[in-house]
Length: 391
Image 1 (cartoon, rainbow, N blue to C red):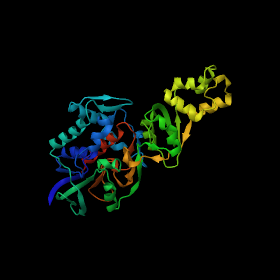
Image 2: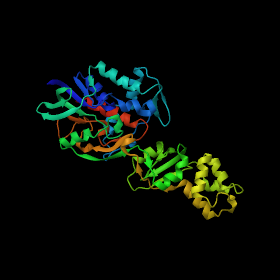
Image 3: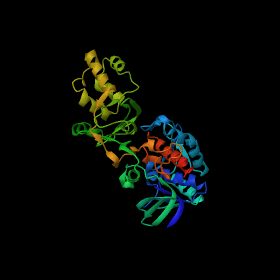
Image 4: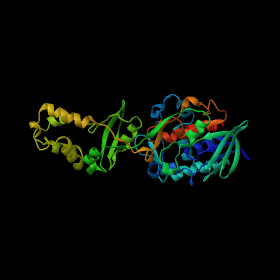
């Protein structure tokens, strides 16, 4: 039986940060991951450039049934702390939009920082390691794996959620929680594209690849960024953001002209045809599609010929387009998982289970889901650092 102080299951962002934090306290740390390569989600994130944090981190960027849970960790290890780590390693980065920070080069730069820091504190990281059994003992835990048996005082579950199974995501962390009688809240795909019913898909098929700036609203939440028409439905940053607040059966509202007083536009161009005006507002392809689908009877009419009532209907359709998504693309393409281990079962200071001494849960496996834009990585850094101070 190989003995260590801390075993961390999961060598992703949160797990590696915990290893660094604990290792700096001279704890003997072992990180185990079942995949053939550690940090896969780091490597594929941000289009291969890793949106590693955001200049503006606020608790309001996080979704949980307990909105206060994230505050403690986020205040103890901030975006500025991680930025300092990036700068310490000489990694070039830039702000893209809305405070989002990306590597100038590749996501591998961030993974290398974490692995270098783990090496400095003598934390051992092992891949291809499957967990076969976890047993609670008086002095901690026994962990049986395909690479041998280990014993530790503290066991950290950093296994992430269910999103992107091809990257190795599983529900293993939830299974461990259930093994020890810890409450797991229902999960669903979040930051995920919407699918449309067959009729709507056919209506918009020609728009695949077209994007437009819009405000998307659902359940009293709104986001303004691009939406993207795809061959399956709707994607783009604004759609991904709102998907975290959407439940099956809910309507979604889209304002396609957020900066435009559409009624004024229609009244100020009496001699122009509607299709001409919309061509000035959208790409030609989008304008033609909207005219064909929504305004066929008005398309070739001069705006002076269209009644006030019909102009109001046109305005309403363009600024308050309501539709019911068929569903989402699910965990296959979801960036994160909503729901998970109930935060009421875990200390917001130490991340230790209230029920099982020495058992810790961090990162995405918890019921803490963030907005798009580097916030989920910051949660990994913050929760990992905080837990590492106590394991």
